[in-house]
Image 1 (cartoon, rainbow, N blue to C red):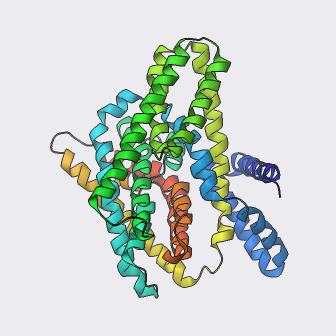
Image 2: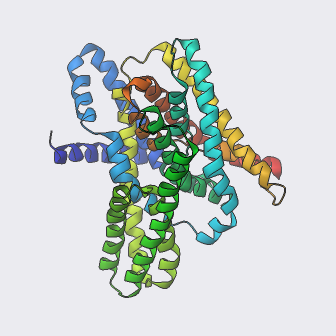
Image 3: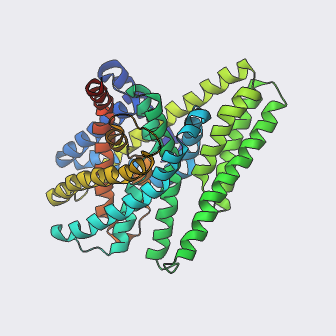
Length: 415
């Protein structure tokens, strides 16, 4: 099947699932599409028990789509830029220390805690896995996914301060999480010796370099937008900025996700205020909102259909281990957000139930699945992919659907 045919099939299915969700389920689009695609995958798996050809045909289509490449190399840049474009920089700056600590120290703490827990849990289920690979699992499952978080928080109705913390952390911690993952992967595969110098260099190049590159992209975009008043060309400039900027960042081994977040924040704030006419603002917002919605629909449909790949050899033992890891990841998330909150609460107040909301609102998504697919084969990749998939599905379906109710419950008790 050609690339065009694959895109045609995926678009048609995503559109159908989106219609069914809006018409009947009336759930948030991302959650509804993912649940329906999961249901469709389950039906195909069950039917495949009696008519193997149907499941094999569907699986062959899904297997032609490299989920990791599609998300990390294509979708992520546009989704991050679109998400950052609508974040108020002044709100973000008020929460900068909380976001910075959770996106760095929080990710590292969670990586170590989850990895250590996995190292001691896996042998109880018959899996002997080296500690470095368990840490890799901790690194890929610890960052919250901005794509999942941004889409769901829009309808959750949480307070502005809390929404900014969760959104800001999710925008920045995936870039940090990817750097931690790459550092551990280089050590695990023997490309580099484990040393603080190597990790510091990688962090400086990827993270600091990515942020600096994002600032440069933001200034370039601002300069170009300010000197013309033609919304078609201005929208095209932002599209080129994202596509070309992410490609260049990857070429120079800088953090493309962080570059997109920073440039999106600059264009969405200073660029929107000082370099755009009202007409341009309107069309730019509509364009990127549409890009965001379409790519989200495609992404969450893909997450659901990945079940056709993951379902192979999904034993009861693995399922039980996955349920335990869901609890472990949540517990480690609670600890990793409690430390920054406890550290900063001496100087500033936090809203009632902040730790519970930050824990439950830390959704995992496609980035974790994409990183799990990048694990080396000798690392028990199949097992970690299944565990990751279970955590992601629970995170989006259960946490995503109940975060609004949790917030309302906390507000009632506080009031």
